[in-house]
Amino acid sequence: MNNVLVLTQGFDAWKAQNRTISRRQPMITPSLYIPTINHKRLASKLTTLIASQNPKQIIIDTRPAEAYSGQTSSASRYGHIPSAINIPFEQNIDYSSTELRLKSIEQLATIYADIPKTTSIILYCSMGRASSSTYLSLRELGYNVANYDGSWQEWANDASFSIANPSRSKQGEF
Image: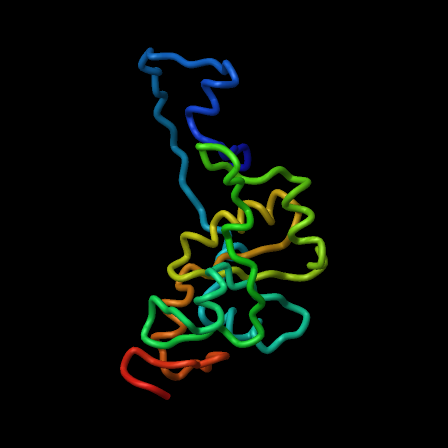
């Protein structure tokens, strides 16, 4: 299924733009649709580890700066994945109105202007949800991007994986 659209703003904005609204129950036609996973768009702990050691790949930590720098953590350890850069997902959101929406393509292009489109990108956050707005933004801009859904929870809670800026641990100081 390649014909998929994402609503970048909520229902109130849809109504404010005088778009079509109906209260009629739609007739649903059953289909034989079988979902498939594009494994190139879903990063694992292993592919993220490999990317962290490859200067031709970029890992973007989409958590707030406080989490990236190791001041806060939702996992047992603090810091970030080695080689990851920090571009918080909040930068993709337009907070100028009462209803949140993704920023315009032009605004998003400015945010990610320093990232070459010829590189592969892996995104992560705390649990794989917040990075999804960055995933959608970068895909819309034409980047080759995958989302690491295990994210910081999986990485930081595995003591065999190194972290950058290990400021502390919930089990005690390092």
